[in-house]
Amino acid sequence: MYAVVRLYTTQSGSAEEVFEQVEREFADRVPQRVGALLYTAVDTGDGSALTVTLFADEQAADRSEAAVAQVQQSLGARFGIEETGVRRGAVMVSRGDAAVARPVGIGDRRS
Image (cartoon, rainbow, N blue to C red):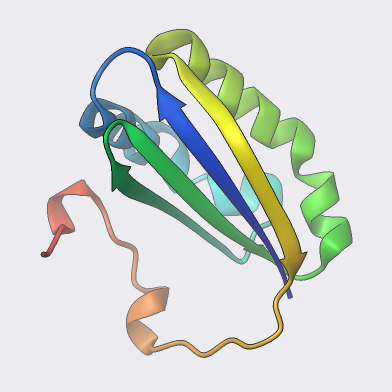
């Protein structure tokens, strides 16, 4: 398994608006569109966010770059989203609960 973590900031609009748009427009399609096993968007506060995307292997992650760029361009034009960093690497240890397989949306937030 291979992971890609992307860091983002937004210049205009609230992070909440961005996450709502991601949920409405992209979240259900991202895994198939980019060949991901898992896609997660995280509000890290102060108008910043990160995404964690897991792939079967590094080649699948590499093949996803064009689709990721299209999503970023769309969100960048509307919300001023800017990618500020990317970290990539092989997953060395992984465990998951069944809850990870259940989709989570804006309305499902828990403290």
